[in-house]
Amino acid sequence: MRAETRRRWSLALPALTVITLCSILPLGVMVAYSFMEAGQYGNVQWGFSLEGWRAVFLDRDFFDDSYIPATAHLTILARSILLALATTALTFVFGIPTAWFIATRPPATRAYWMFLITVPFWTNLLVRTIAIQEVIRADGTLNRLLLATGLIDEPLQMMFTNGAVLVGMTYVYLPLMVLPVYAAIEKFDFRLAEAAYDLHASRLYCLRRVVLPLMWPGIVAGSILVFIPALGAYVTPRLMGGGRAMMWGNLIDLQFGQGRNWPLGAALSITLTLVVVGAMVWYARRAAKGAETNG
Image (cartoon, rainbow, N blue to C red; front, top):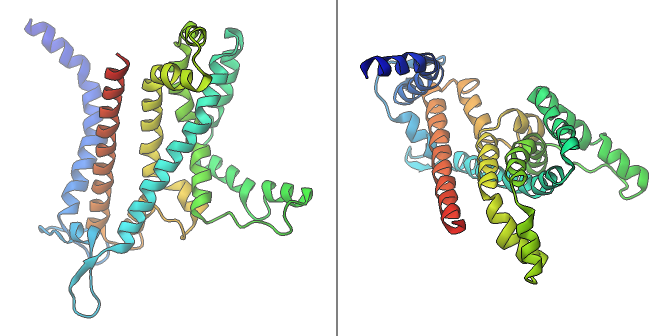
């Protein structure tokens, strides 16, 4: 028994080492930095301080040195959560029909359609963001098409807005919604839908009461895969939003870079981690309730 236990631990040791060095240790460093004092030229000074955490939510008033809510940070946090939720919703709207289309193709052609969905993953995130940027900028493809058809008289200013960030993140993260939903639909027994029609169920009722509950695990998995990276997105908001649509990831980079306030940057990073963990717990509970309902 002991030999078997040692063998299992020896097999798990490489994975545990990688997890410790690449995940647990860096997270521990961020937690430690968040409770230290900011250095004058960056880095940290060894000494316990809650100033980094205080600065996440509170600012000092310029006149009487009292504490006031850090409206800039709270606004950026709210924008990040709302854009991540909107990205998840849009990828759901476009991802469900796409996954359904692929899953209902003949088995011989499904691999081809899945190949087209996964092609974007072969290119760098920066390249994909620049590609969508070329489409919606003032002299981009979309504006040229609208001008050529006479639908508009002057180019639409879509760049450097929350809408541009939303479009960019939806494009980037759409495959992350399609893949798990496709896996769920592929296992769907379409005879259940036929039985619902035989019992005079409408299309909407069949979709709501038969199809979507059986697709629920894929929907939850896709929502998690989209929401978490969208919440901490950096490249897409930086290019598509500029300085007008800053998100939480850009704020963290600003503190570690130009702001030279590493404790605040670390506290912002841990705050983002806590929000992500809270979202995952909520999604997990929703998935459990959905499974109980379907059961």
